[in-house]
Amino acid sequence: MELISSCLLLLPTIAFSLFLLKLITSSLGHAKLPLPPGTMGWPYIGETFQLYSQNPNTFFASKLKKYGSIFKSHILGCPCVMIASPEAAKQVLVSKAHLFKPTFPASKERMLGKQAIFFHQGDYHAKLRKLVLRAFMPEAIKTIVSEVESIAVASLDSWEGKLITTFQEMKTYAFNVALLSILGKDEAQYREDLKRCYYILEKGYNSMPINLPGTLFHKAMKARKELAKILAKILSLRRETKQTHNDLLGSFMEESEGLTDDQIADNIIGVVFAARDTTASIITWILKYLAENPSVLQAVTVRISILVKLQTKSQLFLANCLKNGVLSFEQEEQEAIMKGKEESGEEKLLNWYDTKKMPITTRVIQETLRVASILSFTFREAVEDVEFNGYLIPKGWKVLPLFRNIHHNPENFPEPEKFDPSRFEVAPKANTFMPFGNGIHSCPGNELAKLEILVLLHHLTTKYRWSMMAPQNGIQYGPFPLPQNGLPIKLSLKS
Image (cartoon, rainbow, N blue to C red; front, top):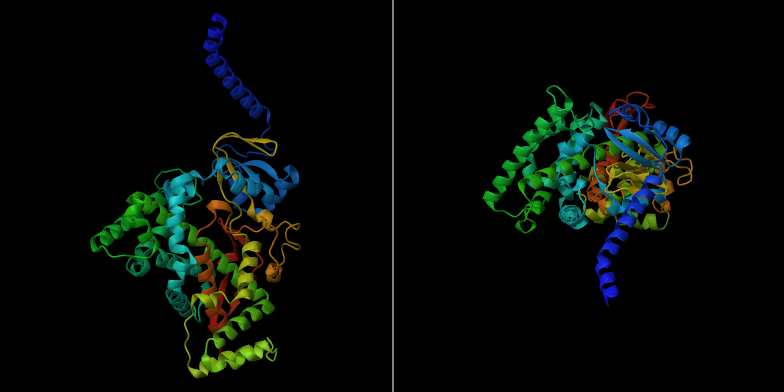
């Protein structure tokens, strides 16, 4: 009996000892694992300048050749592990997503706001994602197609006959569409003040987080405070009027969601960040690729113009011509179709369903997303020590799935440097095409981005012609890859 009692008394001690043994064994197991191969560069600065001052393909290719598809580096003040295979990217973004929280470098996190959707997991992230999707899902954005079209038409009209820097003008276009989706009709009242502050803020996104007077980071943080004040004023006025709004701000303000003003401000600024430069970069590359590929431009233009013509009841015969193969897709006929529409004085606004009848244009967008790979990578952070493909990723290290390398791997896309929209007539292999990310943290605004691009291209290709004003073989990085000098073009109406 005493023996049994003694054993019972020892059970907690034995259990605790086994727990410690397991913990130590696990730790030793992690400790035995090597870090991925690679170099960390200079103290604090790391290899930031090597990455951002040249073609990312050059940086990544040299690393991949030397170390393989997983290697370590040091970017924007953060130790990190970069991964370049579709399977590993899926593990980080989907199957093992609970081990890798979304994050950004410290400078971006402080400027966007720590309560923005990008930096969270779990219930808070799920709630924010639900609210963003509510405002950006097709059912919501199909109601603002005409407003997006008005912005596109006004933008094109203001550029007609002028030499413009494509990227800068597309940033303005994307910013105005973003404000429309966030603030609805209220956006016009606050557009200029918000734009002024945001333009200062964005200059500090990839700066070192050194908050000293005169630095980009310091100026950006001052602009961010002013942005928050403007948003607080809008929130206050909306609460006073007690009107219902179907835009993103209205979604965030629902009392049942219980978001604070700081949480709302962080996420509004975050959405503008996500919606503006990336979309503007994509459109800039599309114009370059279309100008360099006349046959693709012709296919896009013909398809869109025939769609316009089919919208008119008086021209149903055209549908039969297409059905019976009578009408050929030639530029001369396209010009004739457009001339007929102009002579009839018809004006027909686009609707949501029209944008779903543009398969060639959609493939152009997909191929541009692949070739240009505006987002070379995304940031995740290990929430604990992680054993990953035979290596140790220490807790707190950043993990970067390299979308650019996956998109430019000839095993995934033959002749990867060639611009060929027809490759998307067949769906790409799983996890090889991720322009909007993957998993629960994929971009919730991708439908809005596609809508604003399709609407702009509709009017651009059917009403205007453009020419690049200088050879465009160079690429600049800051941080998004862009055609040299932001692609200067001259835009003119078709005669």
